[in-house]
Image (cartoon, rainbow, N blue to C red):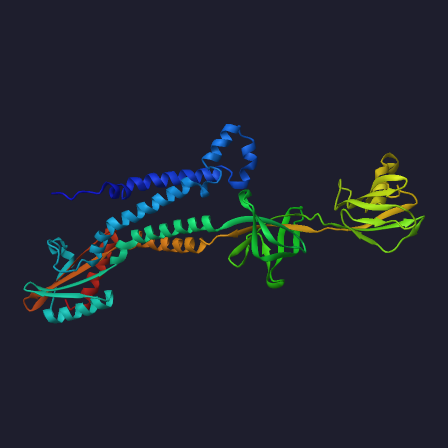
Length: 461
């Protein structure tokens, strides 16, 4: 009576199920490649009809790798691999444990003539030499003495049968690493002005703010350009602080991330800091006033000898391709007046005669009897960092290494078994060599020929 098959076990051990799951996962991966994900999907959603946007959100297609469908497919694939492995492993283990004796029926008659030859030495001498030769070649040799003669058996690569299970285990570890990273890791973004330190980062996908266990400070941001004006180098010199003390410092460049306490920082972008400083001076009736003022946007300063106050409205590194400038608001009993103070106002006037008459807003002496001048603008950069914590990375890396090992075992290794039969033949002995391999018959045939040559060399023919 045939053994009854468990339908649930049969379903989850099906190769067809594996193929279907792999196709679905591949389709999701394609969707994740072409559809913007998480916070990048914002603009894309606004361009869609409301109904289409709602369906994409319901199906979680804009955050595929955190979607219920993705976790479900990963779980089913894991279960499929586990059940398949459990079903087929006993057969593989049996092949590994199969002894060399008794010799499989019909094995030696299939040996070719070139694998059989006679030698002058007696049987015992031949057995001793060939056993020694086999031990040097394969390490372990089994011996069986029968009425037909002496049989030697050796094998190599028997654990090649486990290659497919190593691949299965590696895939399970990679899936586990992906799930662990998805559930317990995070991706975030933070912008830091030069000289400032932050301890909070903004999670991707609008998932809120995450507090770090340490502070990260941008000591300096360096931007270098090629001769054609294209950016050459972005570099952020970072310090990591705990309890106000610098624990680590390092330079962060594109494709050269920095890690601190399981969190990795990547150079993502840069920008101009809003905290630009203007070095401003002014004169009253032609008499220069001291000292020079260092101001940022929003700063208010007094104008001595009057009841006026100045307010810095804007500080620009380069406005309208005319260089650094600062926009001031002067408030006095005469009313409010706004104007720009350009660093290179003399050159601008030479290039545009009559400019100040046509555009009084560009006149640094618009508020009499004061005249302002801009010495320089101290420009600061801000660095944009991608912040990633993925506790699943070690699992994925380990699984990847194991996957390579499993594939090498599966496709490059073969289980090869060798038998040598020695029996007395008159005053000498007769030697027969044969074997079998589970794959790559061409390479195995070559190895048999090499073995035959080695045996002939060891014997006196």
